[in-house]
Image 1 (tube, rainbow, N blue to C red):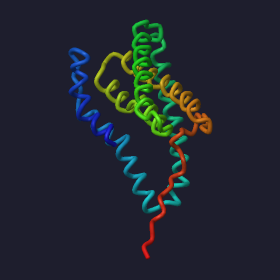
Image 2: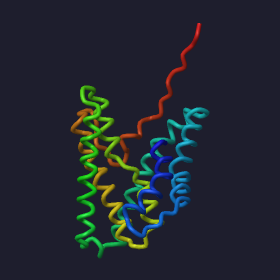
Image 3: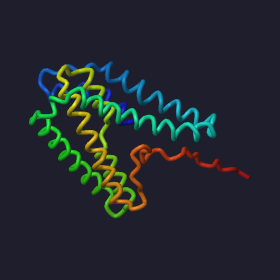
Image 4: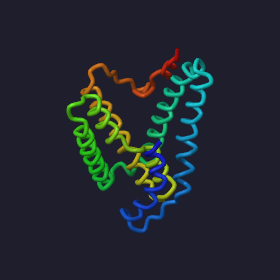
Length: 195
């Protein structure tokens, strides 16, 4: 939640400084994040509170459908821009992005040295950037389709790299492409009775 809210305020300020001549529509970023991420999360949290048994049935299906939608977007983006795959500058940008995110991974890992779980969470959390926000900004603020293609390819490649690294860090993690690691059945903490 903090990352989403921070993105709305920080990205419109930082992006024009990094890319000369770029105007970022703050409302396009905010509305996309609110409708595509915050609203579904709020509805899910509300349903978990008032209809826990229904949520336990629906959530795994939502997780699978969202992954299928992700793969469909990836395929459609690549097929729609096949000629751009030969662009050397795009691949240099992707390699630069992978390098930066791997550095972030190791920085995050080192913040939890001595505590294995903290190291793993720090590493994966630091390297996993806000893909939805990046795609929204790339699609709504750049006319060049290479920006969207680069963003989608970089985030997809990093997703698989991070899944692979997660399996190395914790041997009990299974790689399931149609059910993301986050798609565990929802569980509520049992309420403590006083007495």
